[in-house]
Image (tube, rainbow, N blue to C red; front, side, top):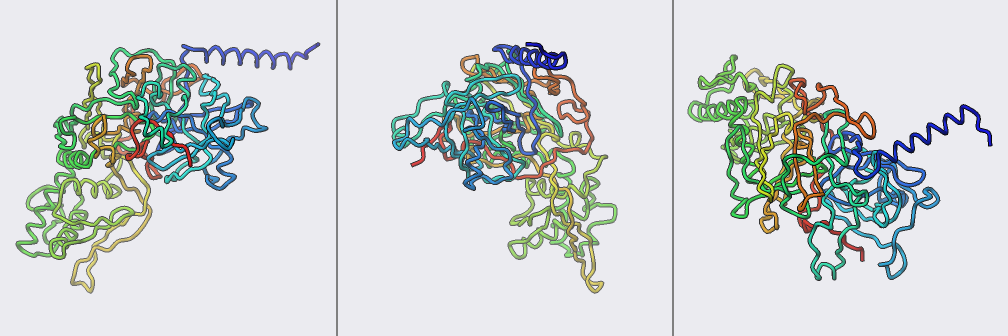
Length: 550
C-alpha cells in the first residue's frame, strides 16, 4: 500500500486537476473554450469518448446537433482523408454505446440526412460522453456520427459541427405530412444536455476566438422573433448613415439570423445590390472612378480621342480629380465599357476571374472591380475604415427592444490570394495603345456579402432573411440566452479576449483584434477558401429537420 513520493505527488495532482475540472464544469459555473480561426469558420476543441478523442468542430449558432465524423465515413470513401481526425467508438471508447436502431425494421442503425447550405450529411445516432472546455456531459442518444457527406466546400480539416442553435424544444411540431415522409426533429444538442442557458461567441483576427458558457444575463436583450433560429426583425439598413429601402422586404418586413457557421452576410439580391451602390456612392475612391469613367466614355463618344490623350499623367479626366482611383484602372474600364457599346459585350480581367460587362457603368459593378484591383492601390497608407462607410443594421426583438449593429469596412471586407493581372500599356508597332497583362500571384479584395435564396423567399414565416455570418462575430461579442421565453440575443463591444484557462478569459494584444481597433491600416481578414453557406439549404423548411434514408 506504500506509494513513492513522486508517484504520490503525481496522483495528488491528477486528483486535484479532476476536482478543478468537475468544479468548473458544474452547472452554473462559467467556462471558456477557445475557438480556432480556420479561415471561413471557427472551431471548438471537443473531446468525445473514454479515453477522450479530440476533434475540431465548427462552432455553429445556425444549427443545433452535435456531429462528429465517424471513421466509417473514411473507411467507405465518403469522407476524404484531409477531413482529418475521425471517431471510433467500438473497442476504442469505454463509454460508447452503439447507434440506436429502434426505428429500423432491419435492426441496423437508422441513417438520417441533415441538409446544409454546403451539402448534405448522413449520420447515425449514438451515445457517448462529450466535453467542451470544462463542460462534460453524457450525450445519450444525441451524438450524431457522420457516415456519409456531399459537402461542396474545401477548407481546413472538417471533423464535424458543434451546434449552438436554438434547441428544437422551442420550435414548432412538424405536421403529419412531413412526419409521414420520414421527417423528424433532431435529438437534443450539446446545450440541452449540458443544461447551458447562457453563452457567448466572438472571433479574433488571426488568433483564437472565445466560446463562453454559463455567462451572466445581459442588461439589454432582444427576444428572438423565431423559435427555430436566432432571429431578429430588421427595421432598417444604413450605409454611412443613409437609410436604404428594400422592396423585397414587402409589408411583412425582413428578418436577420445570427449565424456563426456562415462565412458571409447574405440577403435578397435587390438589398445586396442597393448596399453595393450606396457603399460606392459614399466612398470617394469608388465615386470618383464611377464619375470619371462616365466622363471618359462621354469624351470618347464625342471626340474619339486616343485613350492616352484623355487621361493625363496627373490622373484627371474632365477636370475631375482621380487621385484616389488609379488612372490605368479607369482606362481599362473605359476600354471594356466602350466595347460594350459597340458590340454588346466586353471583358475585363480582374483577379482570378474574367468580368463580363454588359451595360453602362453602375456603382455596384465599379465597386467590385475596384476591390478586385486592390493590389494596385491598397497599402499601409490606406485606411479603409476611414475611407469607406460603416454599414448599420437596425434590428428589433419581439419584446420591442432595438439595437444598432455597426459593421466597419475592416469587418465586411476580406483579402484573398489569387492570380491577378498586372497591366502595362504598350503600343503595337508604335501605333495603337494596348493594355498588356502579366499574370502573377497577388492579392484581390472583396466584400463579405452574398445573395442567398433565403433572402428571396417572402413566403417564409420570418419573411425574406438576411444572415449575419462571421463578420458579426468579429465585430461584437454575441450573447445568447436560452433561459428567457422566447430565447434572446444581445451584442456587446467588450474585448473578445482569449481563454487563459477553462474558466477564465484574459485581454489580448489589440493589434490582432478586430474588436480592439488598434490594427494595421491596411490589414483585412485573410481568406483562402470558398465560403461556408447557411444551414439549412434554402429549399428546406427553416425548422431544423432530419430525414430518414429510404
